[in-house]
Image 1 (cartoon, one colour):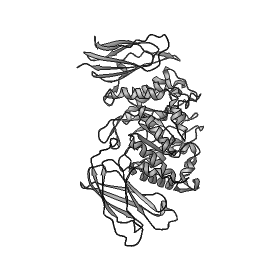
Image 2 (image 1 turned 135 degrees about the vertical axis):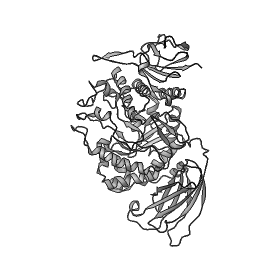
Image 3 (image 1 turned 180 degrees about the vertical axis):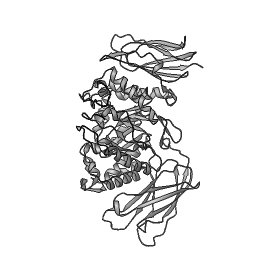
Image 4 (image 1 turned 120 degrees about the horizontal axis):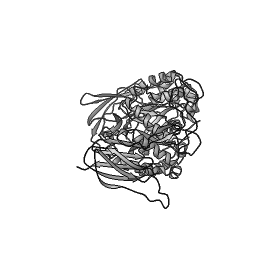
Length: 561
């Protein structure tokens, strides 16, 4: 595949082409470039050295020093031909001086500076930071994450020009993707079609850079996944090759403010197989070793994580549900789980000796358990994303059995736990234009509505309070499960999600409340809908109202001051 010239146009970075030709005695060029805070500055260098493997044989770093004494050291990366680059994100306003260090004398000791000014571009919010169970940008901007998974990072820029407006229109503000692509493509990320694990396909990485930056300029955050062990190819890497791979990737895109890098998808697949009776303990040892390295490489403090647990249909003691209720990765800034909601509905119990069911059941138990498991995980005090709740493919398995109504319930039961989730459908695996697949689903409009609702409540201040609302229980296999859920800043704001409507009764502080009710699903023909709204007065510490039954509802109550 040829190197695509559009990448330079997409990236739109500040470039300082220093024209270092590698001759002994080449003069240092002093230059000062004006760069906005949290933007990405790029510095390009040329070496005339003949190298057997440019990815390994030439090292390049630069140390940037701020006037206040702060220093950040970043690694350079090989970008094809005779070109090396360094990328830097200024975290503070003011002058940053840099000095290079390299084993190539022509690239060693080069000096320059940038003058960092206040951000002007609307998308420059700075890196996301975990703040308790939610996210906040460095400039203070809150972000309620609505995620999807795509595989079009190597598609032409004309495809991105269709995808990005669709995402923006529907309030989808985070994209995750496997750097290797889809199953069977991992070897294409490495040198010589996968024959050389010490070198990389520069064109593939340039496409990844361009995709990340195009999303950045659209104010969409992105999670590139380094490892996709489902492909099995990346299991071949030695620890030394793992380290080199992580260093190369982070040198390339770690200076983009919109990245949330992820170490691996289903990290247990590093050493474990889905059909084996036990998880291999080396999986988490490997994850914690290289997770700490990823933390070290995230010099601009972008948030990092890992995804687990691997689907296992045989493992017991510990089983899938054991791993699902733990989080043994202390270096991770946020939590990514594989919690397939349909499997939660089928499992007779969420116990150590119960394997994950392969067939989904979309009942009240599934969604009540989804909410409850996410509530239990709050004890780790990091943001939680159910990264794989099942894909909307209307299939017969837990991983592909979602429909648009079950996706809607998945998103709202996650939100009622103060957590997040993602949407995937056939677009997830489309290497070209995914928009036609996304347009066929009702889910994008449901996500847009959810984003609009979350704009109207202080969700980051609200806590789950299911105990303050009538549960509207339904029996499944002899046990009762709730259908009403509540998120609240008690005494001020209340957000209700009701899967089947009916009478809603809530415990509140005394006073008057403004009620707004929002129907989430389509109205059947000839069906009379009750949409309560207006002021309610708490009586005996309670408010109550009625929502048309057998419908999905959200209700917002605000204290009248």
